[in-house]
Length: 119
Image (cartoon, rainbow, N blue to C red; front, side, top):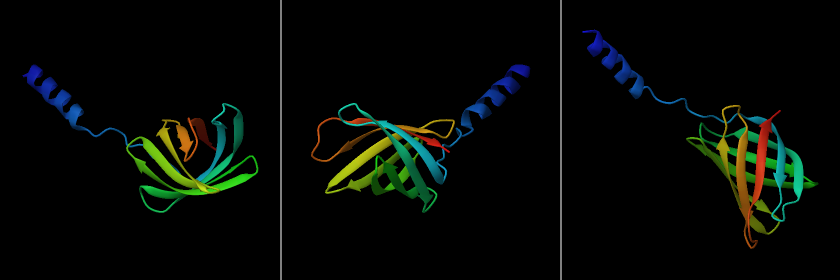
């Protein structure tokens, strides 16, 4: 009987959903690398527009860019416009609330990196 009970309890543990990742609205510290590997920093502000979508504004190196973003499981993605180019960044949501990702921009080779840390 103890074996059956232990097996049943173990089975219940397997069907409990994993902790969902979340991204919070607010200001984040930005640290990244450009396509050529040079560093940049600044801030990003995320405003939630629904449970899974948001708007985002980056202020880095005297440049401001705006975009839309969405959360899907532990992936957080944003599309943005920078001058005449369209960019895309995909982040992994970390347990501490930070976002680590890679980005690219239309018409350019390669990718850069970026980490957003909640302030």
